[in-house]
Structure formats: C-alpha cells, structure tokens
Image (cartoon, rainbow, N blue to C red; front, top):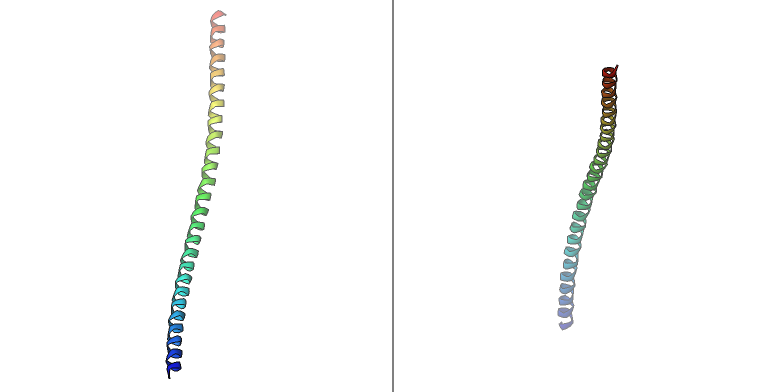
Length: 94
C-alpha cells in the first residue's frame, strides 16, 4: 500500500509540474504574440518615418533649387540695374 501512496504522490507531483509547464508555455506564447505585435507596430512606424524623411529630403532639395533660382535672379536683376544705370549715364553724356 505504501508503494501505491508513493506512486500517487509522484503522479500528483508530475501533474503539478505539467500544469506549471503548460501555464509557462501559455505565458511565453502570449508574450511572443505581444512581441510580434509590437514589432509590426514598430515596422509600421519606421516605414512612416522613412517616408516622411524622404519627403523632407525632397522638400529640402526643392527649397535649395528655389533658393539657387532666387540668387540667380537677384544677380541678373543687379546686372540689369547696373546696365540700366550705365545707359542712363550714357544718355546724359550724349
């Protein structure tokens, strides 16, 4: 009878260990699922950030080109103003 009691206690202990292992497995599975969701969210965030960065770079390039055009036009205006002043002086001399 003593052997049966020991076997019963061993089975009970094994059942408790098995239940603990199953709970741990379920917790790990839940944690893995949460981590995968977080990774998907971070991937989405990174994609959005990369898109905004690309747009910002394009805006910067367009702004630089516009600034270059403005500088070129200012130089042209200055040249034309100087030319007009010279023509006015030439007319006064004549």
